[in-house]
Image (tube, rainbow, N blue to C red; front, top):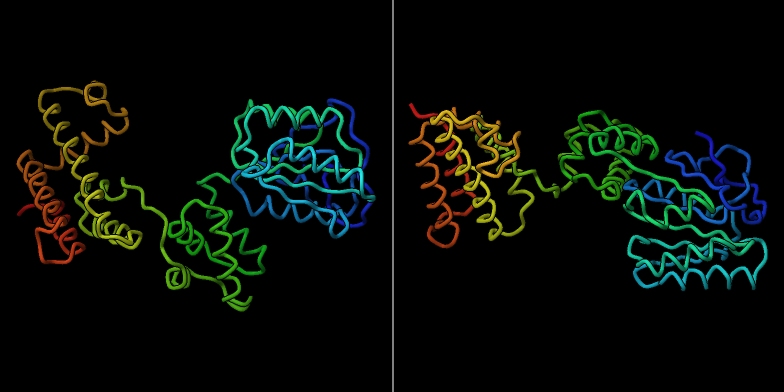
Length: 357
């Protein structure tokens, strides 16, 4: 999609404020892309979304339209709406050639701050561009409406399911290549945090030096695991009676846990799941359907369906024994055993997962 935002040199001065209603609400991340021709600047740009690296690139392009020293950067953590307005008006009074005021984290602003900025945007300083940066905003946010009316709103989002593809794009932007498995593993290790992923991509790209393709083994060796593994990964493996899967999920959880005192909480979540499965097995024997059991057990229907499916792979005795085993594990982790907590956890998980002869 084409846009009117700053693509780079040459640097004409910012245009006078657009008449009310001239701005557009744009969702494309290309709104500040380079086209080779410098478009007139809007009085305000609102950049929002989860793709922080792309927002930073857009801000760099925007800063490139102004002379050095003509940019002021504020944070809504300490700057109010009145502070932002004052910065815009002050810069317009004392300098020539255009100025840029960037305010980050504006999702922190209260209604009064938003109203002060919205009032300023009805008659903005002619030589000043205001760039507002936010993480997530409600679709009906007042600041979004005010900026769409006076300038341009740009949303830079990356969906979680698209993160591996996004990571591959970051590698290419950094002058490197990575195979699909490497991109997927990087997301698994780091989590769905674009900023942190971009930092790891930069490190890996530097390491590769443009001479080799980054592969899964490289990521495993060079990136520290820190993403929290979803709890259902472990419980799903247990429900399948997949011992190898349980141990793999357990290992991932241990890699992400820096304190042994966090393990009892993990065991508590597993025990709660086993108790739910045991309750589903009892209801299943009574002829209760998963959909009806969901309301009784206060579970999501999909979760109830899954719990019923898992319950049918265990006998009632096995589920009772699993509860006892997990209770003993909790005692062991709280000082009742001389064995390493990690070893106690692994032994208990194997015992409650494997099929009996």
